Length: 158
DNA sequence: GCCAACGTTGGC
DNA sequence: GCCAACGTTGGC
Image 1 (cartoon, protein in one colour):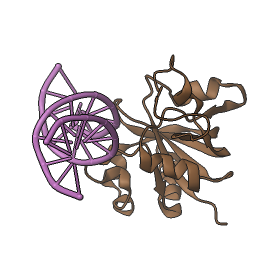
Image 2 (cartoon, protein in one colour):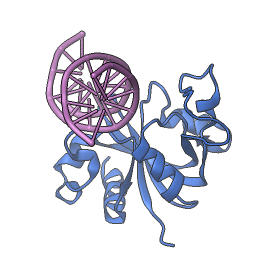
Image 3 (spheres, helix red, strand yellow):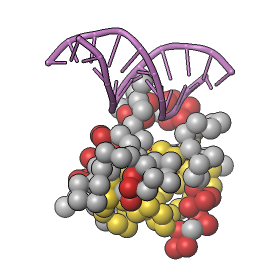
Protein backbone atom coordinates (compact mmCIF):
# COMPACT_ATOMS: atom_id res chain seq x y z
CA UNK A 1 0.00 0.00 0.00
CA UNK A 2 1.29 3.38 -0.98
CA UNK A 3 2.37 5.69 1.72
CA UNK A 4 -0.05 8.50 2.44
CA UNK A 5 0.38 12.09 3.50
CA UNK A 6 -1.56 14.05 6.10
CA UNK A 7 -1.80 17.37 7.83
CA UNK A 8 -2.73 17.64 11.49
CA UNK A 9 -3.61 20.83 13.28
CA UNK A 10 -2.81 21.70 16.84
CA UNK A 11 -3.05 24.90 18.78
CA UNK A 12 0.42 25.63 20.10
CA UNK A 13 -1.03 26.93 23.35
CA UNK A 14 -2.44 23.44 23.89
CA UNK A 15 0.19 21.24 22.27
CA UNK A 16 2.99 22.62 20.13
CA UNK A 17 5.72 20.98 18.11
CA UNK A 18 8.13 21.90 20.89
CA UNK A 19 5.95 20.00 23.35
CA UNK A 20 6.20 17.02 21.01
CA UNK A 21 9.98 17.40 20.85
CA UNK A 22 10.10 17.16 24.65
CA UNK A 23 8.09 13.95 24.83
CA UNK A 24 9.93 10.71 25.52
CA UNK A 25 10.83 9.29 22.11
CA UNK A 26 9.32 12.45 20.61
CA UNK A 27 6.10 10.55 20.26
CA UNK A 28 2.56 11.40 21.28
CA UNK A 29 -0.96 10.08 20.92
CA UNK A 30 -3.16 12.45 18.98
CA UNK A 31 -6.09 12.59 21.37
CA UNK A 32 -9.08 14.84 21.62
CA UNK A 33 -10.25 14.78 18.02
CA UNK A 34 -14.05 15.00 18.13
CA UNK A 35 -14.92 15.31 14.49
CA UNK A 36 -16.19 12.34 12.51
CA UNK A 37 -14.33 12.99 9.30
CA UNK A 38 -11.07 13.38 11.15
CA UNK A 39 -11.93 10.33 13.25
CA UNK A 40 -12.50 8.24 10.13
CA UNK A 41 -9.12 9.17 8.73
CA UNK A 42 -7.39 8.17 11.92
CA UNK A 43 -9.40 4.98 12.37
CA UNK A 44 -9.30 3.75 8.80
CA UNK A 45 -6.70 5.41 6.67
CA UNK A 46 -3.62 6.55 8.51
CA UNK A 47 -1.08 3.76 8.39
CA UNK A 48 2.22 3.21 10.08
CA UNK A 49 4.94 5.01 8.15
CA UNK A 50 2.65 7.68 6.72
CA UNK A 51 4.02 11.21 6.81
CA UNK A 52 2.29 14.02 8.63
CA UNK A 53 2.66 17.77 8.45
CA UNK A 54 2.36 19.35 11.90
CA UNK A 55 0.38 22.58 11.69
CA UNK A 56 -0.03 25.31 14.28
CA UNK A 57 -3.50 26.84 14.23
CA UNK A 58 -4.96 29.76 16.13
CA UNK A 59 -1.62 31.43 16.41
CA UNK A 60 0.24 34.21 14.68
CA UNK A 61 1.15 33.29 12.07
CA UNK A 62 -0.65 30.03 11.45
CA UNK A 63 1.94 27.73 9.89
CA UNK A 64 3.25 24.27 9.14
CA UNK A 65 6.08 23.73 11.59
CA UNK A 66 7.44 20.29 10.91
CA UNK A 67 7.11 16.70 9.77
CA UNK A 68 6.03 13.68 11.74
CA UNK A 69 5.55 10.01 11.05
CA UNK A 70 2.61 7.84 12.06
CA UNK A 71 3.99 5.14 14.36
CA UNK A 72 0.77 3.58 15.61
CA UNK A 73 -2.43 3.09 13.68
CA UNK A 74 -5.94 3.96 14.81
CA UNK A 75 -6.93 2.83 18.30
CA UNK A 76 -9.56 4.06 20.76
CA UNK A 77 -9.04 7.49 22.22
CA UNK A 78 -9.09 6.68 25.92
CA UNK A 79 -9.56 10.29 26.93
CA UNK A 80 -13.17 9.94 25.76
CA UNK A 81 -13.77 7.41 28.57
CA UNK A 82 -12.30 9.57 31.31
CA UNK A 83 -14.84 11.79 33.05
CA UNK A 84 -11.96 13.88 34.33
CA UNK A 85 -10.77 14.60 30.83
CA UNK A 86 -11.64 17.69 28.96
CA UNK A 87 -12.37 15.42 26.01
CA UNK A 88 -14.76 13.15 27.91
CA UNK A 89 -17.66 11.90 25.83
CA UNK A 90 -20.32 9.90 27.65
CA UNK A 91 -21.69 8.48 24.42
CA UNK A 92 -18.90 5.98 23.90
CA UNK A 93 -17.68 3.07 25.96
CA UNK A 94 -14.95 0.44 25.97
CA UNK A 95 -16.89 -1.98 23.79
CA UNK A 96 -17.91 0.59 21.25
CA UNK A 97 -15.35 3.35 21.20
CA UNK A 98 -16.61 6.39 19.43
CA UNK A 99 -13.33 8.20 18.96
CA UNK A 100 -9.97 7.07 17.68
CA UNK A 101 -6.45 8.38 17.61
CA UNK A 102 -3.03 7.55 16.23
CA UNK A 103 0.49 7.97 17.55
CA UNK A 104 2.88 10.25 15.74
CA UNK A 105 6.60 10.75 16.13
CA UNK A 106 8.49 13.93 15.36
CA UNK A 107 10.78 13.52 12.37
CA UNK A 108 11.84 17.05 11.65
CA UNK A 109 11.09 20.49 12.95
CA UNK A 110 11.37 23.05 10.18
CA UNK A 111 14.11 25.62 10.66
CA UNK A 112 11.66 28.05 9.20
CA UNK A 113 7.94 27.37 9.35
CA UNK A 114 5.85 27.60 6.20
CA UNK A 115 3.09 30.08 6.94
CA UNK A 116 -0.49 29.87 5.82
CA UNK A 117 0.03 33.10 3.87
CA UNK A 118 2.88 31.49 1.93
CA UNK A 119 0.77 28.44 1.21
CA UNK A 120 -2.00 30.67 -0.08
CA UNK A 121 0.44 32.42 -2.36
CA UNK A 122 1.77 29.21 -3.85
CA UNK A 123 -0.12 28.25 -6.99
CA UNK A 124 0.77 24.60 -6.55
CA UNK A 125 -1.01 24.44 -3.22
CA UNK A 126 -4.37 25.96 -4.05
CA UNK A 127 -6.11 22.60 -4.01
CA UNK A 128 -5.20 21.90 -0.43
CA UNK A 129 -8.18 21.68 1.87
CA UNK A 130 -6.24 23.85 4.26
CA UNK A 131 -6.64 26.92 2.08
CA UNK A 132 -10.22 26.30 1.09
CA UNK A 133 -12.89 28.42 2.60
CA UNK A 134 -14.43 27.40 5.84
CA UNK A 135 -12.15 24.47 6.33
CA UNK A 136 -12.20 23.23 9.89
CA UNK A 137 -10.89 19.72 9.62
CA UNK A 138 -8.15 19.03 12.13
CA UNK A 139 -6.87 15.96 10.29
CA UNK A 140 -6.83 16.05 6.52
CA UNK A 141 -5.22 14.22 3.62
CA UNK A 142 -2.51 15.95 1.60
CA UNK A 143 -1.16 15.05 -1.84
CA UNK A 144 2.43 13.87 -2.05
CA UNK A 145 3.33 16.72 -4.37
CA UNK A 146 1.79 19.21 -1.92
CA UNK A 147 3.66 17.64 0.95
CA UNK A 148 6.92 17.78 -0.99
CA UNK A 149 6.28 21.37 -1.99
CA UNK A 150 5.80 22.48 1.60
CA UNK A 151 8.95 20.69 2.71
CA UNK A 152 10.78 22.39 -0.14
CA UNK A 153 9.42 25.79 0.91
CA UNK A 154 10.69 25.27 4.43
CA UNK A 155 14.14 24.60 3.04
CA UNK A 156 14.16 27.55 0.70
CA UNK A 157 13.04 29.89 3.43
CA UNK A 158 15.92 31.31 5.42
C1' DG B 1 -36.01 13.88 8.39
C1' DC B 2 -36.02 18.86 8.69
C1' DC B 3 -34.01 22.83 10.52
C1' DA B 4 -33.12 26.32 14.20
C1' DA B 5 -30.19 26.89 17.90
C1' DC B 6 -26.02 26.29 19.77
C1' DG B 7 -21.06 25.49 20.39
C1' DT B 8 -16.60 25.37 18.27
C1' DT B 9 -12.95 26.40 15.05
C1' DG B 10 -9.70 29.32 13.40
C1' DG B 11 -8.29 33.30 10.41
C1' DC B 12 -7.94 37.94 10.85
C1' DG C 1 -11.79 39.90 20.47
C1' DC C 2 -14.70 39.40 16.49
C1' DC C 3 -17.28 36.79 13.56
C1' DA C 4 -18.09 33.63 9.52
C1' DA C 5 -18.33 28.96 8.62
C1' DC C 6 -19.29 24.68 9.97
C1' DG C 7 -20.81 20.37 12.70
C1' DT C 8 -23.87 18.59 16.06
C1' DT C 9 -27.97 18.37 18.77
C1' DG C 10 -32.65 18.06 19.75
C1' DG C 11 -37.57 19.46 19.23
C1' DC C 12 -41.09 18.69 16.28
